[in-house]
Length: 297
Image 1 (cartoon, helix red, strand yellow):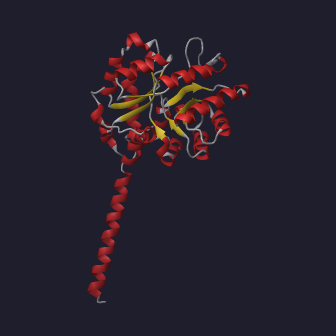
Image 2 (cartoon, helix red, strand yellow; image 1 turned 135 degrees about the horizontal axis):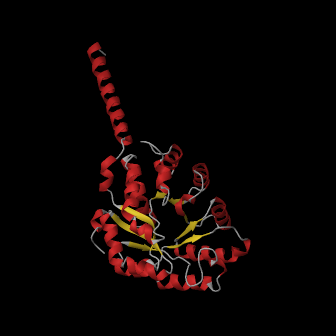
Image 3 (cartoon, helix red, strand yellow; image 1 turned 90 degrees about the vertical axis):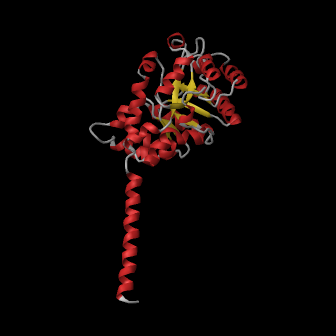
């Protein structure tokens, strides 16, 4: 091979290397303002009774439209709120069944008489794709028979449990059945980031929503919190954003909450931001999610 041929070959190799480096840089470039062009799947919405008069179903969908929220996972106290919203906008709502109704609330629902029958009846009557969001504030081994029934209901329908708890109740549920499908509400809420990482790493099928975690993720200054950034990159296929409209003040602040979510997603590469914004939810719930849904029901 002549010197000229060697030079030409080396130049080609160098060009290919430079192009691959440029492509890699592009893959890691933050999505920035283009985040505003992404549809959102809000994975943690409640439409509770105190919101019904102040925020009629039409106004809820208008809020979703204004913030580019194409679809939402909705549970309510009582379940009638979810059904009202789903009946009004069936193409925008993925319903899930919250156990809370009547005197059964977040602190005593597992002790409510007839809870298993109530859940079974509502699941038979409506197309719920999850059971929850429900709280497990403290493990009580006497609740095991009820939870075994709930897991059986969920597995029969291939739907999720949406669980608000610390780490140990999640481990306990997987101990009852390693194949149960779980969405971890708020990624544990008050659970420290290293513990969140540990649990997500321990259970490869565990999904989490990041509602109420916006400020923790954003950290201080220009960069995202480094511990959360590790969670986001390592478990990017198992996270969804959320709002948690558990009180009317959350509805009042809905636009600000969604803006905060877009802010932290804007600092991520496009592929990662797209997954957390909506593509993971497409996979979990078998939906097509796009901005074309904005303005529709």
